[in-house]
Image (tube, rainbow, N blue to C red; front, side, top):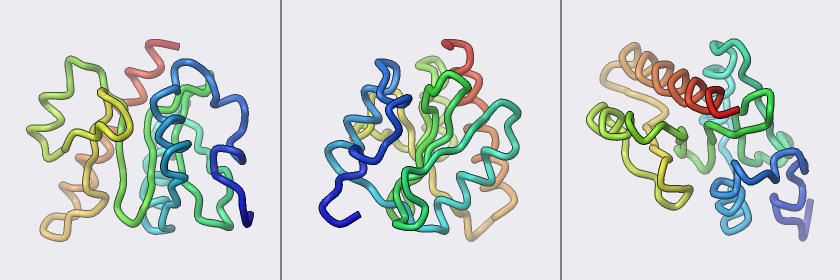
Length: 143
């Protein structure tokens, strides 16, 4: 992978208009994903019927995304703790009140959440499951 940017390794099916914001983020930052945060996202994806996971190179710890059947990306894991979901505009305020933070580096409808909640792991896991499901429902409704 030496000399390659992750956007160059990204499957062309993701280079669609509905993913322009997240693909621009990948192009700008060539993000890796620590296996811990990537595993959190993969686990969330397994809980959502119709969700699919993708990583351009698991071996090199590249970013991990969840997407719909039509390749619309609705979640991304990156860095050591980066975990963000694409949410419907009408739900962003609620997500922010529930511990999320805006992720404008990815796009205006992306909200980041901490991948772990040391004080209350069960509540943290439930929060992530709720918002990943909401992100999927939003993405699937647009497909």
